[in-house]
Amino acid sequence: MAARSSQRPPQRKSPVRPKDVFDLDALEKDGEVQPFGVRLGGKVFVISDPMDEDWQDAVLIDMNDIEGSLRPLLGDQYEDFKKIRMPMWKMKALNDAMEAHYSRFYGTRGEGSASSGS
Image (tube, rainbow, N blue to C red; front, side, top):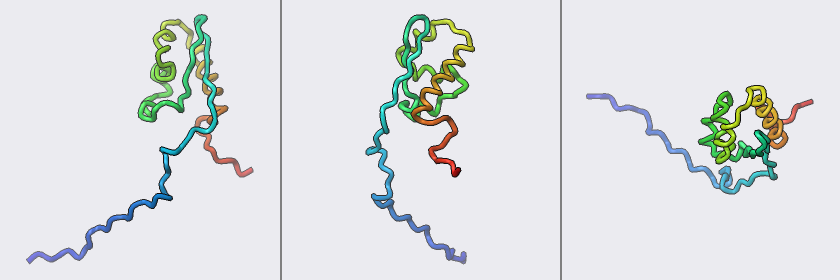
């Protein structure tokens, strides 16, 4: 005869209390983020706020992939932007300027919202 297991079945956790729920549906963006415009080939392009991108699209963006990063941020303007020849040093300057612009609203990459202890 086989021995019976003395283990109890796992107990279910109680549901989360409503007051403990982080409500994303009620969350609003703080303040207005100004768009970032860039002139290239005599035309002004508007690069959208990266934080407005859907998270499922944003996680696929590789910051080392210039095309993959700019395509969603330029939207319908991307094909026109891509047609204009530009040296890589200007692309780096664009990236640096765009990062400086949006860091005014969100802080720099890797910088949390916590303040220093000093």
